[in-house]
Image (cartoon, rainbow over all chains, first blue to last red; front, side, top):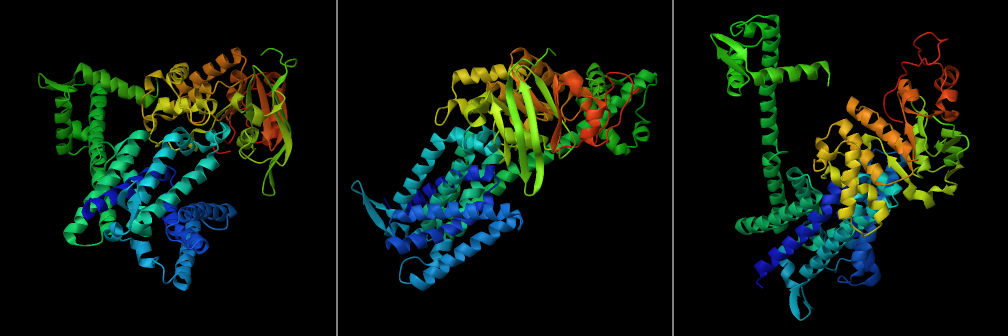
Length: 369
Length: 265
């Protein structure tokens, strides 16, 4: 495997792992918690490093996971105290824990490969240099770690899909059914922490947030189905990773930064162009509704005129409805094209369809069902 | 409205006290509900109606008191109690379909790790039929009207196959067809010997929809058959005199018209 392919593989694995746990985080409206956890895991790593004195020990992952859970617990305790606003609680907890970690590294671990720049930004280009042998295969260490993390995420989401879904949608019902929502909540937070650590080396603490939050947020705009949302989120994450890698190659710049940027770019594209929930679709729907409403008003108006026995209202239409003549003309043309009205012997009359629609609208107005 | 005095209580709440901080939300509340009874819980805003349901379900800590389902603690009887929360308690933008939400009702019975299969799906469809929502099984939940959402929640509770149903304002903001569907469902549950406790806001419909009533305002002012417990003097005590009456006060069957209601409990 060439270095280029290895880096891309690492990037995709990290992105997919993040995108999967991110789905549940985003649906629980806890996107900001990803930001907090991805920073405070550093303290978990530093503290467990002081204990085991080995930067490659798996205990570091456990320390990070515990710190992730502790972060969430701390934030929630602050929120529950009622003394600080909810969003402030997150902002109070994580910078404190993160800066403590940075300080400890500076004081006691200066000669260890744990420097703040890498922690913040990651250095994917260097990832292929640290290697391990797995089943006789010479692989980059971060790829092995991330593959493990991805597997863990797949396993947890696969096994507890039903529980995660229910406790995310309706935690109160989950509690009454005996499906411990608190356990799932903290379990998910631990998973986020482990994922953040795994993705740490490659993309850094700041940008890991982009990979956790952006792909699911984009995926939610594309689908109304949780399983599909997970797949799409993974796909968008992988797409961001690959396109980010090639952007970085082209511009000769930081890979992690380009990945996060591309995630943002993909999000913008989807936000604008998603078939039903996108901005363009939304604006078009609104415009269409405006015409529909106008056509309905026209039909209603003609219907009541019909019942009163008066005819040929085309010329008086703008005046009666207080419409601009140009607008009235456009509405008329559309109503005609949609088969609601027709010209007959110089007069304007409702078609049968127009009459039905008018009656339906008036039943809706008066509220009779 | 048969005599229920002889039947054993399906749900018994004794001396229940719940505090939020130093403020009592429920104070020494007693409540008994026999099987086969439809019971309304009415009271002014902040009377602790929602808290009562949450306390029965063990969702809020109690300071004192005992809750028994057929004589045993709730923790042992979880599967026998179905819960219909307020419609606004969940995010209807969640990416899922009507049928999936209904199937959630059987997750407790399935337990961890086991997934719902064909028989659960069939049961969910039957539950949707019962509330007149079978045509919407595959609709995204965000595209339902308020009344339809409420009926989906009811179908989900039916899916729990419980004996006691606790419902938090199922009539809140629903359309006429939904109200009819809910009332029809209540009666069917009653004929099947289930009991239903409903937090209710519309005093006018209490005698029509329910057999029993609990009047609650932090303390419980009455609990029993509507005929004996739903009268002006008890209502005045419960609501503190803020109830307006229509018709001649001496006529039987008169009902209060307006009580300041809005949501949240």
